[in-house]
Image 1 (tube, rainbow, N blue to C red):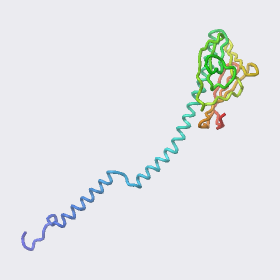
Image 2 (cartoon, helix red, strand yellow; image 1 turned 90 degrees about the vertical axis):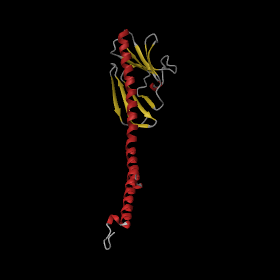
Image 3 (cartoon, helix red, strand yellow; image 1 turned 180 degrees about the vertical axis):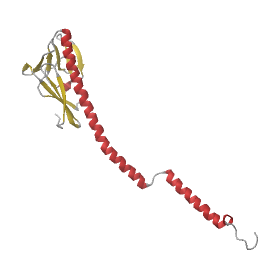
Image 4 (spheres, rainbow, N blue to C red; image 1 turned 30 degrees about the vertical axis):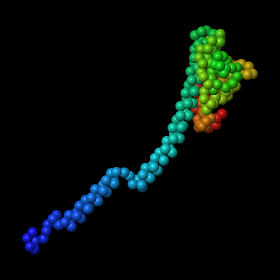
Length: 205
């Protein structure tokens, strides 16, 4: 190097070392940023996740209750229509009744969540609905254990432990375990018409 001539910055070993060190530090920072989250970022994510789960889980639970109640009510109404239709088709009375423990005949008492039968005058089972899980409770608001549909399909006789009568019958379906906030109330008129109403009593039975 010529005497008195200053070295170029990029030729100065000290300057080159400082530049190289800063470049390596910058690369390390970038790698740390790319490689993962900081503790604060992770905690924020966990808090947000906790809030989402706290809101979503009860919603899923409520949806499950609603689905089960709707399905049970629809099954009973479908059996009512089946019994009515079979009575008209056969021109003979057909019964919808609480099933006995074997599912082979009418129990003559008991709750509808034990299962039910659609049965013809010769005690031939047309349809058998198995018992429901313990969590679903059918409350018989009219104490009816058998519904007898006449051949015209226009009259339903409700049979209770104390006798029989042509009258309107009501039943409530609810979930006891865990307790739901909705119920389904089924009404069957003496003319064989059904309706299902949602109630929110929050009690079961």
